[in-house]
Amino acid sequence: MKLIEKQYDLAIIGAGPGGYHSAIRAAQYGAKVALIEKDKLGGTCLNRGCIPTKALLATAHYIEKIQDAEKFGVEIKGFSYNFSKVVERKNKIVNDLGTGIANLQKSWKNDVYIGCGKIVEGNAQEGFKVLIQGVNNDELIHAKRIIIATGSTPALIPNFNVDHKKILTSDDILDSTFKTIPKRLLIIGAGVIGCEFADIFATFGSKVTLLEYLPSPIASEEPIIIKQLQKKFESRGIKIITSQNVLSVENTGSSVKAITCSASVPTEEIEQTEKSSFEADLCLISIGRNKLSKNLGLEELGIETRRGTIEVDPGTLETAVNGIYAIGDVTGGLMLAHVASYEGDIAVANALYSLKQFKVQSRRTSYRVVPSTIFTNPNLDSWS
Image 1 (cartoon, rainbow, N blue to C red):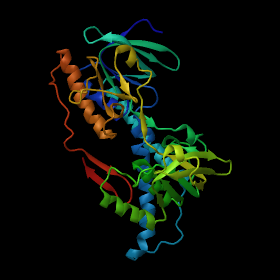
Image 2: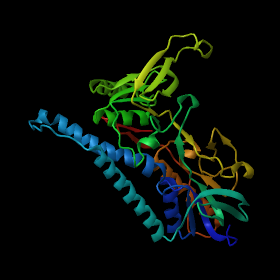
Image 3: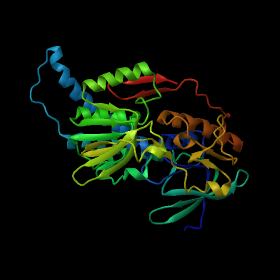
Image 4: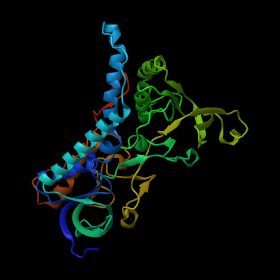
């Protein structure tokens, strides 16, 4: 470990849309910033979420337009696609944007550390020590204020036996090496992620089945909108089977097999109740996301978490420990990239204002109007 501690006004743990945006905003106020990321700059949104998904969707939309072209008097016969090239395009977009983020940090003179950040000690009066555990060495830095922007990861259930070969998460499907279009795709969880992937793979030719525990897919949306989505999915051969309690998922070697029962069956009666079986070539598990708040040193500092969620003051985004703030998915709010970036603006303003050495005013959050889109066909747009 290096003994010399670099001094910073602000250290940000996590370089997704919340973290890297916060770093730039703080630098614009004149702060000296350390940005700590355990994997790749851009976080889930750039590397395993929004951006690669939309890159695949863009190609899928071209296919849909070609398929509908004859309705407009345009005849296109014998067209085909190369999914390997589709993935190569997606990877290039991700890599180019990642390089762009790195260059932005450099242009604002922010120090980027690749490693796992852990707050080892400190307080708002004396500042905080952050241990950065890198691949080759550990470093210790000192920061007057901290913003935690560690995000979330796909939720897993032991009975689903995710092996990352045939039973996958969204991280696996959006990995740079994934170049498979299964003949049959089973998706467990018909939320936003599940429905977007159902749309993509159905367009590329997969026979898609969605299994959902709740009585409706994307239960957070208005029923009239969901009804239209279901109608569209059914016309494209996408099956949505609701009220299903998925009991197990197994890789049989030649396929994937899921066993379910009705979601209305009480736990004590599941063993005796009638079961259903679903078989596919690949299975995507999309049952939600877990917050990434472990191994940050929070408990030792007195910051409690509830099921991984870091609790913050809803107005200032400060945690139970003065001088430490949290933003984005890890706080349990709306899991949207632009919400994390917005919260970054709030946290940076409040963190730097508390230091009394920057020309910045304190701010409070307002979620009165938050736009969001679910990128299925048709798109589902809403304001919450």
